[in-house]
Length: 611
Image (tube, rainbow, N blue to C red; front, side, top):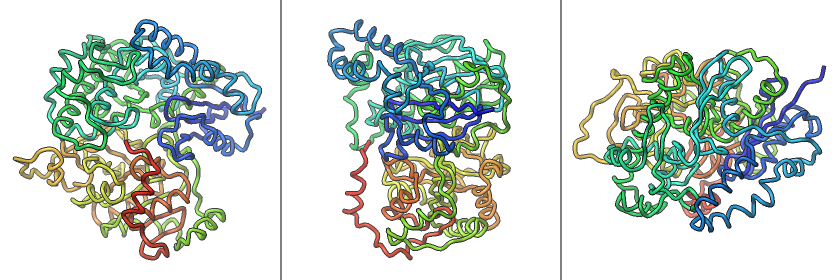
């Protein structure tokens, strides 16, 4: 009997992606940005599709079904209704958006068939149903409550429901223009960060401030209902029919125009970030309490961009009513491609589902593979005059652990690339979490980004409770937990404000302890990632510490590296000390090429859009 192959696609908004499911098993999934090197690339995911087909050993004509992650007709209806209700103020936005809709987006069935060169019916799954399917079907639960929460899909901005075996039923929704995601994005825009990519910066900035504006937000901007739904006061926003997120009323309310990108971040932005984070935490907890009351389920599955807010998710894990959370690692729009394919397999084709432990995501290592031995990679590296040594996996693990213990920075690019925004050890930069200088060093000299940005700890799963007040495993770096009291250092911070707080170590793992004593924890087990588990085990043997720094292998505004060439080029423009590509070990001091000058590095970085 032939296998059934379903391709899921997300595209044309942000984070385009493709995912391939074969008889219900996830074969491959990847974001288009990793191939084109365009951050959050929204174009049709030709490269991601080609990769998925190659991973399955098939061509596009051997696909049985192609499913898009949202319904363009319903989305067009929302846009048309919005423009009609807000005319004539929405005229400029209408003129900007509608040519693309009338020539391409409204005719997606023929557009996708043309892009792929196939004559096949294209199916459509509602946006939030795609999110729900991406959250529930790969989860380890036979039944669970589901919460999807983002900016906006067609009309929905949040939904909840129940997943049971191979069926999902969405019970209730919050509709546009009332949206948790758009509210948070409005503050992202106001504080000078880029929408759909800068929200995590706003979240990282929040601990440096005080929630001085929280009452003002509650009073003027948002009404939170008892069921967790919200009503936003549109008097202060411009995203309904406008070209920006906020308007002059919003700016007057908070005392100034939005911060100009790249300008100095002040205490005001920090206090605003702290304030909106408090509001989001309250709202997420309120809606979760209502969902638990309505569904009586023990576990909750989540997806949608807001589910990537690790602070809110950590608070929900610690204080919420559910026994366990499971969050789709590619919770944003990229994950919608996977959800659309899984929805079609289970609900449209009525195929049964057997939950897989610990989950069906294979550690999220679903992308392109950098293998230990590749003649093509060797030839490319030789052309770049790279110098390396080749080692066995066990020797590599010991070598990496040793260099980390010596205070060096090591980048790793091996195995299959991660699907989703988090680097989980396959495309990662690693360092010693015990160093009080490592956070600013990596931010400024390697990532070339704001010094306030926190780093995540990678910890042996079996030792996680020794370092963090952790409620459950966190293999996908999607939950923030407090550092244990016994690990904290209570140094004096009187008279210090904002970024100056970084100068004070807060625990015996200061490089991963944020200024509020929290950490975005990644637990590492031997099943999902045996190579990284081995590194941590050897690092522990050398240092008696089970925690290291893990951050994505890229520089500011560049997508995470994909290929061996991406990895080597990034290595050479940063101050990373050592690099691992497959089974190859590179020492910076042994390379024939000279490090780039500051001017050359600046020119290289200009390839990427600053946000």
